[in-house]
Image: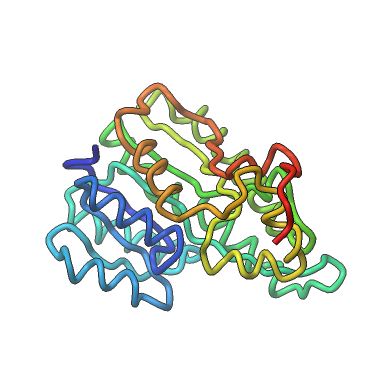
Length: 251
C-alpha cells in the first residue's frame, strides 16, 4: 500500500510510534524513525532493514534539530511523502498540583512539536505538490480523565491545528489528518491510568484495550493514496470509548 513512499514517524522508539513505523515498512515504505533519548526499539527495525529505514535523532521541540532531520531523511530517501507527528508525553497531574515544568513539557512536545515539524516538512511537500501529515491525538481531547487537563488541552488543540493545515494546504496537494486513539495497550496508558485506574476498561464498549497495530493500520491507510479524498478529519480508533460508559463491567 505504501510501496515507494517515504515517511517519517516521530517518537518511534516504542508504543504507537514504533508500531506505525513497523507497519509502514511492512507496507513497503522507506521510513525515518525519529527518536530523542531511547532508541532501542527503533534501532532494531533499522538494523533489520538498513536500506529502507534510518534513525533520525532530534528533539521535536528544537526547530533547528528538526530541520537537520528533514534534510537527513530527504538525502536518504530522496523526498518526504508522509510525516507522522506521534511524539508525545502525558504527565498525569491534577491541575492545581501540576508543576510548571510538567505543564510546559506537554505543551512543547504535544503541540509545539507537531507545529514545528509541520512547518519544517511543508516546504518539501509543497515542492512535490503532494504530501500527507498525520497528527496523533488522543480520545482525551473529547473525553478526558482526571489528571489530564493539560494533556487533553494539547490534544484538542492538535485537532484544530490539523483542520487548519488541511484548509491552508489542500489546494497544494497536501492532506492532513488527526488520529484519535482511545485506550491503547502502550506504556503511555499507565500514566493516563494513574488517577483513573477503575474507569478505563469500564468505558470501552468492546471491553478491551486496543492494540498499537490497530492504530498503525489506520495510519498506513491515511498515508496511502486510498485516502486521497479524505482530509482535515479526526479518525477515531477507540473501541467505542467516546460513545459513553459502554455498559461494561469494571475489571
